[in-house]
Image (cartoon, rainbow, N blue to C red; front, side, top):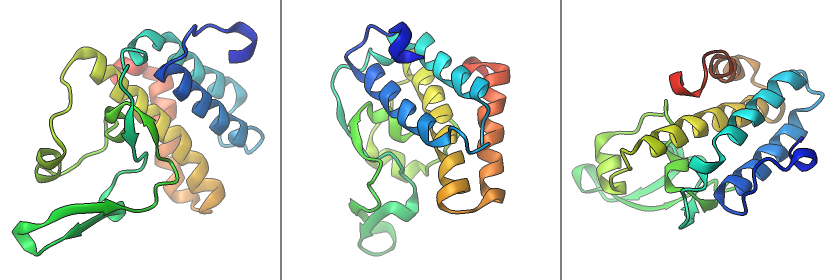
Length: 170
């Protein structure tokens, strides 16, 4: 649909994210995880928010799967410091907010070490879009790669809830 209609008129972050979304959509096609209509609806939500996504004009390296199991720390107890990360197969240059989608919780200490995220309405919308992206991607990863249907169900439900309720309620 994206190539046919060229709705985005973006050469920035929005296009990079839409290209990535298209790759996941191709993988999902025919698996039964989501219907074609659901996949189209996910893409449409991103297309509707191109201008918000393209506010990101200074790409930084994002990990794409930040959680404590992928973080390396050194030190003992209260004097721990981040020393690196593992499992960076989803890393790309983009919005630093991409690593912190709405709905994913991180400790106060971790966020203090990372630095403040933007509190702008645009940043909040992007984090909700990223939550949809992550749930869409994780639905495939958990079902097909990890063969963990039980863990994929909440991710699918997140996608369907956002499709039903809209990005503003994500």
